[in-house]
Structure formats: C-alpha cells, structure tokens
Length: 149
Length: 145
Image 1: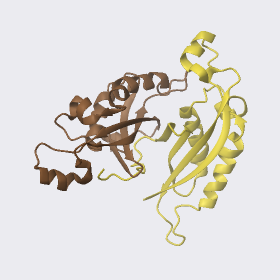
Image 2 (image 1 turned 180 degrees about the horizontal axis):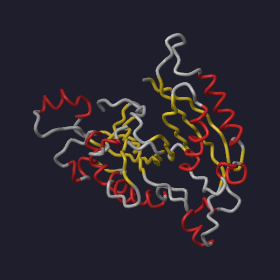
Image 3 (image 1 turned 45 degrees about the vertical axis):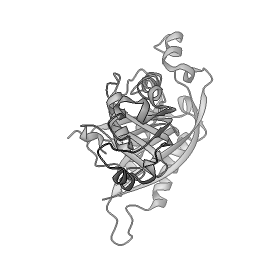
C-alpha cells in the first residue's frame, strides 16, 4: 500500500460563539476567538489517499483528479469565505479545526473513488492542527527521519 | 474494530535547551566514539519542537477536543517551565543518570503529559533539528500511527 498526500492552502475567516452560552461564558471559553467580527487564517490542508499503484499508470490516483476534487469540494466552498456564515456544512457547529477537518473528510470521502481517503490534516497555523481518519486505519506517514542526534 | 471517524488535535511548542550526551557506564574513549561531538565536555544546544497529539470526543458545545488554553497551560507548567533555556543534564532530575538523547527526552515528556485530564494523550513527537525527529506513544500502541 502506498500513501499519497496533496497539500492545498486556503484563506478564510471565522469566530467561535455558542448562542447557548452567555456573553461572559463565550468570552471565557473561546477567548479572543470570540471577537464578534471574526478573524482569519491561512489554512493548510493535507489530504492523504491510500491505495495500490495501478500497474499500467503507476498511480494510486491521478493527482490532477485529486486536485480537481479539492478545488470543487474545498476551495470553492471555503477559500476567501467566512466559515460561520458561508459554508452550509458548518452551520450550527463551531468552526474549529476539529470540526472543519471532519466536514472536509465527509465532503472528500465519497468523491475519492480510486484508493481510499486515509487522513485529512488541517493546519490553522503551523502550530495547531487537527487530524481526521477512520478508527483502525493503518499507520499514517511519519514526518521526519528518526536517527541519531 | 470500530470504523468511526476519529479526530486528533495537534499542537506544537518550542523550547531551547542544552545537553551533553555522556554515559557514566562508558569510558572516555567509548563516550567519544559513541556520541561523537555530542560528547563535547561543555555541551551544546538545540531549538526543540514538541508536537503533542490528543484524541477524544469533540464537544458539540465548543467544537473542541480540548480547550487550547488548558493544554497550553498544562504543557507550560509540566514541560516548558522546566526545560526551556535550561541544561537538560543539570536542571532536569530525570537526566542526572540518564543520557538526554531525544529518545529519552520523548519518554520523559510523555510521562509528564500523560495525566492531562481533558483528553487522551496519543503521542508526542520531538524534533531536535530540522532533520531529526522522534515519536513516543507510551504503551499506547494505537498511538503509534
């Protein structure tokens, strides 16, 4: 089995606010993410697909096809959008990394017909990210090289 | 095996520390041969990157596995306060009689963080330089993914 990863970037705004909480609770729980006019991030999305390379083409799936799927399902929905107000799939959810990663997984999984979706990793910043995968999925690609210091 | 979607939260922290790789169980020559320039007597330093991965249910009210403010405060208190701008050999009791390789550093950090009360610690990864990184998931084999 081979894992293939494609990375895209999109820019979007959001804010965290739960209408069931008081203003004070929202402020205490979400901190500056609760600022009423929102704020934005450059998100980086890594999509990993697993599969066996086709014996004729040598590909798990055509990268161009994956690029088109990501363009249709993610970029057109989320790039330069306000995640609270313009992305129907996030309605009623706090647009955290965890929830956005799950929404992206659910959008992509049925569209990837060659190989299987293995992992969705969404970075909100280089220091904060969420991973979504199916429980029991085999090993995710490890980053870096373990070796002597 | 469950086929449900699983979410993990990953957070990176940075700290700078010095260390010297030297074992009291080895001779001077052996230390020099095994550890090379990492055995230089006055030590040297790195900008370490610590990656902490947590799993758990996403709370529908907050959209979060764990509140970042809670995690940041916990890591600050349990790890960064003790390690940042310190000598691992001299300032961290665990390394008085253990070589502060990044392997041992991973194990020490995992021990310090595994009691985080709000979510399950899946694994940690420590990057010593841009070319070396190490992961540890304790006894949690599922975390070794």
